[in-house]
Image (tube, rainbow, N blue to C red; front, side, top):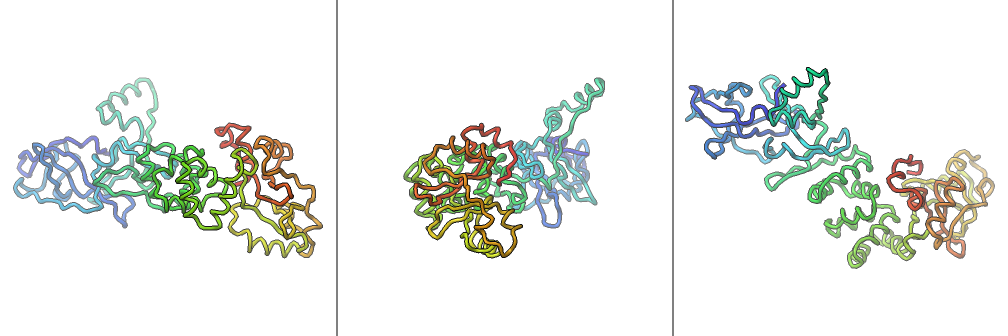
Length: 418
């Protein structure tokens, strides 16, 4: 097992033992046929001048003094590729995403492995031992731990599970969408909270619109506003369209009014109309926290017809919690669970198995009163109506409980309604 920190600074000599310089860095490149980057070149420092030398010129990279296979005047030069990465300069001490553990960590060292004359970067050391190794205290620490019969934990992550997220003007590394697609939106949100402003912007650029929208819905509104601050208007409008209407309205209420109006005007008409409607209600009212994504069916259709209707009209709704029964003018007259609908006799009319004792709230009711209704009747959502009993939307349990349960606690509750 060898590490980058152990060989940096070592003397490099030519075939006759003449001094060539000091090892300043290694250059590696990710290749499609290998899961780990391959080391292609050395960076040699001689009196402040840097020379790039192919790794094939090296006789033994892990020797106390690194010998080359040629004379100093015959040392070939290495031509940089746009995909090349300087390991010490561009990777050490940088933040990376551990896509397996869904966390942000810092690179303390890199493990090098030789397989069939090819040198690979196998693992990333993100533990304290990597730091101790770099400052020359690894052996002393191991000796002390051995004397005290202590186990020193090592913390390695395979390169397969990490992606660079920090780059400078010489790098163009992005987090690939296929890596992010495997992460839960809550994990993406947690990663975002660990990054600084520059890195957050780079990370968001790596994500598609749907991923950004899902991640934003997992964080507080104030943080949403800060994240969207530097996103251009066109992309921001696309993100808002992908968000749940109530989440989009909350975010728009948090940013400056001028930009809020501009973004709404750039959204598709249907989504923009929903958001404008939600913004007319007080922030802490039932109307202010409701979503306009809900499922309705008429009372005089059969269970089989109702299910077919839902396939046609509710396909875009992320989660159908309850099915609300309304007349042609959307007056709320009943409710049934999706389970009851599915298990009802196919020819049975909806009005015959719906519950007409609907627990509901008015659009102007206070958020705390809404939360009390939800908790009292053990609901996953409650419908919101206006003074004419016309359904306006629904308030889900998580949005209602924001008022009475601290957010940090609420995020630990099971999301039965998601």
